[in-house]
Length: 396
Image (cartoon, rainbow, N blue to C red; front, side, top):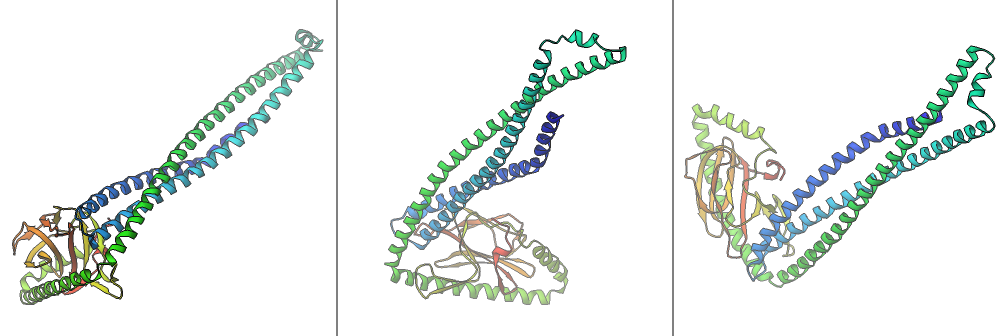
């Protein structure tokens, strides 16, 4: 009957929408995970920013920390926006289900009302027993009895179907009310985090304006740093050339060196980070954030972190060099066969030259400068060729 057709349409609609619902739930879980990761990154960035703001003078380290804080805040706002978009999709799908259920319910009620009316009309001046016993034959009597039973059963099923559709409709209405409530909470959260983002951007504008007034000091600091980096580069290149020369002479260790090099290369994009934090300066050439027409060139990356953070080895190897350079602090060079890693900007060093190192072993603590900035200069090289460390480290 038509009632069965209505129920079947509900079942078909549910089956068609089930993959969408399951996908939405999976995406929702992913977004909530992403949101929690962003909140954790915000906490870390806030900690680093607070340490740079502890000093009265404005610094490039403070600007880097503020940029990272803005970046993490933008990611959080983006996650919330995606969640709201997903909820809008869910609400739209639930509205479609509700519309279909309401249509089926109307059809079932119309059909049931028609059956009740037909029964009432047929019963006026008509007795069921008379209808049964007026049968011309016993077979006709049985057929009429069976018809009456089927008709009664149909009315009963029709009533049950109406109840089921009403329950399903009530359930969908509850779901959509819950989603609307979630959306309301997320919209309020989006507004709040959006205001925080606007404040951070305003702080950055003020900080950049303040730093632009100190161009002469920034230029002087940059000159000193470049001298220190050049000195360090010479140390590193001299040691690497010595190591390469030793490797050519020591044929007996060639097999072990090749194996270590191969293992290192096979772990590209999967190597652990040497310290928690964010990349304040990338590999290669970038424009100076304040000084116009000044291009910075880096053979590694600068990882800004929290005060007292411990630096760890990203792979097994051997300490080839420990050097101290004014302005940069202590530097470690660790060999991994044909590959080398550089850790510059250490306050304390926990290892010695010639020591075998395991992956994840603590090498020392990061140096915090007078401006409150804690930063590790990290490099990866194949022999004497610098490589982009972010291509080798796991996604942070």
